[in-house]
Structure formats: structure tokens, C-alpha cells
Amino acid sequence: MQLRLPVHLAEAYKSPSQRTRLLTETWAAENLYCPSCDADHLQACKQSTPVVDFFCAHCSSIFQLKSQSKPIGMRILDAAYQTMVEAIRANRVPNLWALQYDPSGWRVQNVLLIPSYAFSLSCIEQRKPLQRTARRAGWVGCNIVISSIPADARIPVVTEGKAANPSEVRRAYRRLVGLTRLDAEARGWTLDVLHAIRRLGKDLFSLQDVYALEEQLAALHPQNRHIRPKIRQQLQRLRDMGLVEFLGGGRYRVR
Image (cartoon, rainbow, N blue to C red; front, side):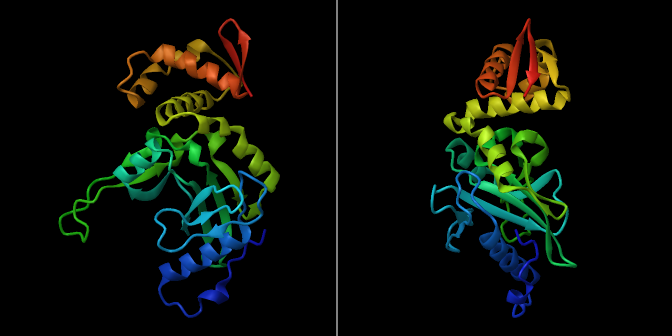
């Protein structure tokens, strides 16, 4: 993977945003690959295609690219809030490449892959409406809260200027692919319980450990009053997916 951006292509552009868009999208088309299949390259979409920037010609997976010079933080600015909510409920969210580049040397420093199946309503944060003086007054955007996504679904592709092996990226991507068979509500529950388990920070945990997070999970799912049965259901699902191992006596091991 070549990590230097093709700066020579942007010499005719004066707008910083146009330069950045051209350089990062060109780099992505030449260097990024499909994590869902064995395709080595992605195809750029037409400019009129909303949200989607790339697609895989082999398996039809779709991707969005978000690029910035600042380090990838806890939140990523995204599109209209209601549009994102509807896309999650309809399973229409593209896979996300979050790219950070060094503007002094025009090199890609970090790329994070968030699979489409990792998006739930819990990781979408509604922003305040734009002020009346704004061109799009009243428009309500959203943030993708990276810290609310399980670490399993935050897949490093480039870390501090070093590219990961594509086979490792694909293995990580496919590890949670069973989530694609769930509807938005069920997928959200599974992701939230998995995230809660990861935040415990230990390899061995008990059912009581997860029960202790009942209030947090209830806040994420206010319409559901039967939190503990849901927790047990999600632990069974995570067992079936091979992400946790049941040891007996209400004890589990993270895998």
C-alpha cells in the first residue's frame, strides 16, 4: 500500500477542500480494497451518488470515505440526523473509511474501517439545528460517536503510517459479519452488549458483571423494560458468533 497522496494531481486546484477531496479519493481508489471479499481495488461512484463514494465490483459492498487532517477522535461529523436514522433502520448504511492524513507531508497516517453492520442508533448523536442565520437554517445533522462502537468493529487499516495486512483486516471484518442477518433493533442490542462487555476490560466476566450495566443499557433502549432477559439473549447470540465462551455457573470468557 502506497501511503503518499498523489499531490501532483491537485496542482491546478486552489480550494483546499477540493484538493483534499481529489487527493484522498484518488488515493482510496488506488490503494483501498474490499474487506468483504478478495477484490484488491474499489470502484469510484459517480459524483451524484449520495453518501456512497466507492463500491466493490465483485460483491457490491458500498463504502463512504471521510477524510481529515486532524487525528481521528471520538466523533466524526456525518450527514442529516433523520437520514442516518432511516438508513440504519433500513440497513442502507455504507461501510465507512475514516482517513487521517498529514498535510505537511501529504501522507496517509491513519485509516479506520467501520463496517456497515456496526452502525446502530446508539452510536448516532443528534446535533443542534443550524441557526436561523445559516444558509440551511433548522437543518439537523449528526455525529458518529466512534467511542460507542465496540472495539471489534473499529478495524485499523493504517496505524501511524503503517498499513495492516489485508488478510488481518478481512479476518476482523468477517468476524462480526453475522450481525448482517439481524434487523436494526436486534443488531443494536447485540452491539451494545458487546461494547459493554469490552468496556469491562477483563477476559473473564460473569453474568452479574453485565447485569451491573443494566442502567446504562436501559438508557440506550428506553422502550424496553426487560433488560436482564435481553442481556441473556445477547450473551447467547455472542456465544453463537464465537465472541464469548460460556464456562458454566454464569461465567464467561472473551474470545
